[in-house]
Length: 238
Image (cartoon, rainbow, N blue to C red; front, side):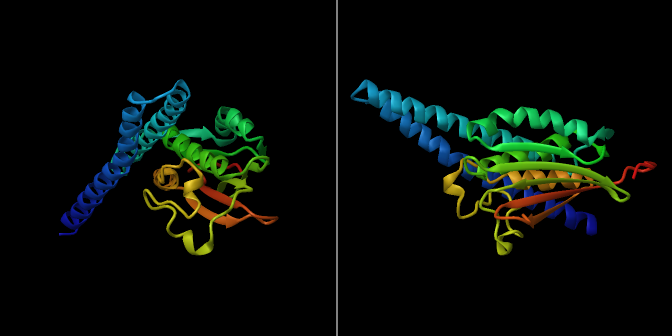
């Protein structure tokens, strides 16, 4: 009976996810169709150029949403995973370099600090999804000339990775909601987020056995996302 109850819960969750995803995709696809129709009747070259720009942006947003939906589905807890020992401090440097051009567009000071080497055990794909979505969120919500700082340290209990930004932060009463799929806060209209970034991060963290915690930035406004990775079995590093 317990197995059947869990199966029923999983099926209901997947049906809800499909319904939510269909709803989220319908809006941008409708907007794209409208823009294409307008392009066909554009009266001037200036109007056509503006509509083409809007269409390109719409295609980009839709592509990102589809990619996020596929990532969310891939991170299903029932999917198998290939575990490996990963040097977290080396792994994050590659992702940091990947996002440097994104930070440069908004003149964001984007730094990384490794206090001590750290090793985690997990699936590289899940770790990449976790870190990329958290960093993308931080850069997306941080205003121009702001800061996004990544720090890594290890301790006897495991490894800690923190991502701090100087964005608007998340109010305490919203922090229990932001990990829900397709959830967007009050400032969502100011960004091009999909509402899946933190949901993906949470699911990826669960696959890695890690814990996510949202904290206030000690000095000033913003948000710190703290990831606590468990110590790999047999690891004697402190």
